[in-house]
Figure (cartoon, rainbow, N blue to C red):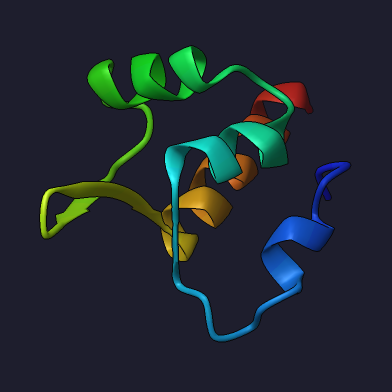
Length: 70
């Protein structure tokens, strides 16, 4: 689990996260999150013009990182 996993478990009803929240969760910069999105590594949705990353996508990407570490 990521060091900031509390971020994603605080609110069990929350299904979409802002870019800055994802950056905090993975301990990376906001620019890196945008780069991951641009490169197709991380999927996103737009809700009324606001960029959001679904919880399932965060979990998928985290699983991919864990597999790469093995």
